[in-house]
Amino acid sequence: MTIADAASMEREHGQPLGAGLYIVATPIGNLGDITLRAVDVLRRAALVACEDTRVTGKLLKHVGARVRMLRYDDHASDEIRRHILDRARTEPVALVSDAGTPLVSDPGYRLVRAAREAGVSVTTIPGPCAAIAGLTLSGLPNDRFLFAGFLPVKDKARREVLEELGPVEATLVFYETGPRLVRSLEAMAEAWPGREVAVARELTKLHEECRTGPAADLAAHYRAHPAKGEIVLLVGPPVDAPSTADPDALLATALADMSPSKAASAVAKTTGLDRKDLYARALELKAR
Ligand code: SAM
Image 1 (cartoon, helix red, strand yellow):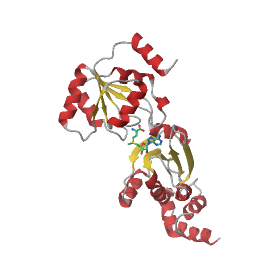
Image 2: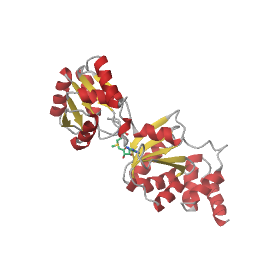
Image 3: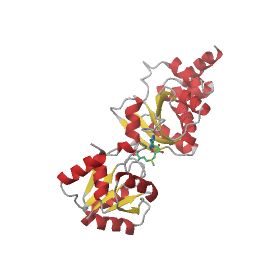
Image 4: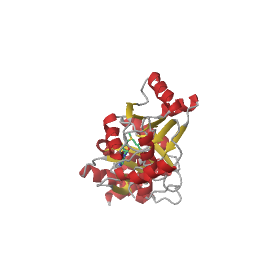
């Protein structure tokens, strides 16, 4: 049975598609990842609110949906939001982003909030999401994770965010771009030398890759082999408490990329050990 068959079967035997706003997740690279419900809703929607009509137009063509599109992002005027919600009161209106789950680092938050406030029915059609795909692929602990979106571009702002997130006892999930990957990894090597990091790239596509290790090693790798495509950057939870962490191992990792002074500060920050002692030890390790 093809996706098209299954979707039309569901349509024939299912309930009529009611009015309301439908949040529809779409593939993050592999078109085969579209869900049966997503196909069904897109085909039966009266209107599709989307970020880019060219991108969504291709997807709609692929699934055989002939439906009007309206460009929408959260910077749209209140008037456009009102127009979409007015339609959603009487007809099914789908909200999609260029790829993945709307609202996750993508437009839709203001529209969904406005819909709920206005009493318009909101339904979610879940599906692909790069953050979750990266998390499951990375092998990092997933019992607790925190999605932190994109890191700031400027060094100082990025450092501040890393400082704020440092103590969080969870795997951290960031969205990243190729040109900024090495700078982010360098900043993480400085802030969190002992933590395990994963770079999940081109998920669901031909060149899918997931590389793990300390941030300093990954920075060295991607300096030599610049990363292309789309990236999820993940960082495992903070390393063990000072009693069980191996300061020599942490220092050795940090020294691969930093001066003894910076390495001592970074390891002191993550372990709580005395910076002066760590500095002395870093000089010894460096001299070996
Ligand atoms: N809403 C989308 C989702 O649910 O994944 C994310 C949209 S956000 C604007 C785009 C970012 O998601 C990219 O810069 C990248 O960090 C990540 N991303 C999207 N597709 C990806 C893929 N196939 N592989 C790795 N990361 C991806």
